[in-house]
Length: 119
Image (tube, rainbow, N blue to C red; front, side, top):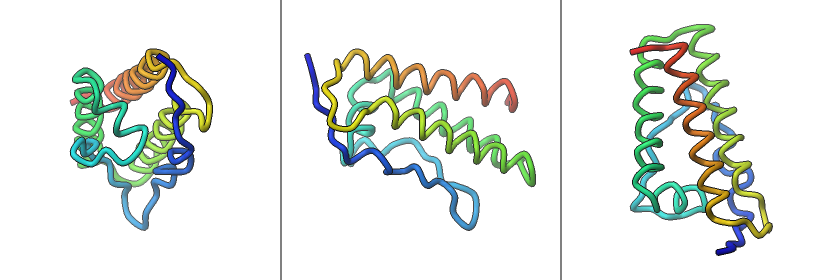
């Protein structure tokens, strides 16, 4: 199955920094507004990866400050960039390829977070 993913994703959620710490929550699967949400929410495995990353990130940020908090914010921004890269704008992409990419990006982010901030 070939899917043409829209251009709506590129640039969405890439600006993570706010005046305070960035917000990261599990995607809201009741709001299927973009390619990322639709793709992640379609499968239980990717939904669970999203929740795990959100929980681990919040746990790490709860005790982080200064340089550690900045490093977490930077890592989150990089995660968002990598996840967005799984959805090339206006390019036919095999859906299994997208899922593998998304899963890999989540797994990499979770492993890096757990290695640096074990619970």
